[in-house]
Length: 509
Picture 1 (tube, helix red, strand yellow):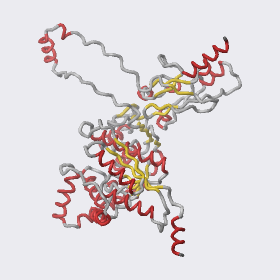
Picture 2: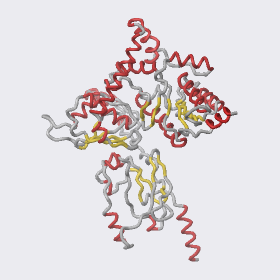
Picture 3: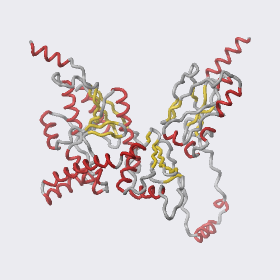
């Protein structure tokens, strides 16, 4: 009887955390981790109390069976009392027809967006992933031969922050064989490893590591683990002594990042590799090449060939736009600037004689006629969309979304009690200008004449509008921003304004 009371008391213990998230791929590692996590959550003797297990699965839609796998995981989680959310990628996004780096950026963003969305809904402190000791060794080998610097040879820590999400890897000390033994002992289902034998990881597992074991004995695995641990310790030392000032200067938001590089020009390339990697990771992108890092160092350095720094755009990565202003590097997230679609173009020979002969041989006036004019480009996304003001002064209206942008508007009072036109003009004339640094901090707020002066309730979106407060910002940046303006030609009528006009007409009658 006493034991039963004690069990009930422990069963009612409040949870340490409301829930924990887990990235569930369906492989043996994540399935075993989910099974163990649920057992701990349901154990009445657990010191953690009862907590929810929130599984998250991304269906990349790049294999015929991927949808069936997602359905199986949903059923398995339901039977074991776990919540699961499945995000299915667009089927048009294929590894075969998408540049590798772009594909990785898009899928990585989708994965971490899912983590962030579920974290906001379920309040879990971290996402658990099923990496084990063998994954660390594979990472060490791959990172060494891909040119990773000494600080990132390991590539995996038991706890870390990735894309603003806390990641826990509780299975890193355990070997793959232990994970498989557990799955077979307790009947945990899992999908077979579908890594192709011809892929880099498939060759590493099936060919290279067995060859290393044959050449150097089984001790090679322990030495790789030690190398990864040494790299991790060196990273901690480097973080404390070399990167502190850089970290304090780096400013990051959803729109981009910027950092003043003055004083770092003479730092060794190891510093610059790590610094540029952090900027790129803050943007959700992979690290830039050493060649790009050297180009950046040269751009922010005054030397014999350059007595004055040159401001402007600099190409460091295809997926993101970068610029230099003095010694400050600015960078925009990939979603800020929509990618331009490249249309078909005729090949033109670099030999002028060949071009001349081709034109002469055509001999057809119709063929030699100038091409018809191109149709005007369609308006940018969101053009003419309305942003409704709040119901009262200083009250924000509803959010209008255009792609990744969210726009709100509110009416604010003038600085003085003077309600005449000159008070409004004075307020607009004295408005603080918005520079590119405020844009990068995602602090895009500005003043417009209130549309209520003419009886309207809303403003309209016009991407690329030329607003006086943004006169110092490069046109390439302002063209990408869906600005709200008072009026846009061709915008649909406001139903609220039409009702007001009808009511006024009825009252007058």
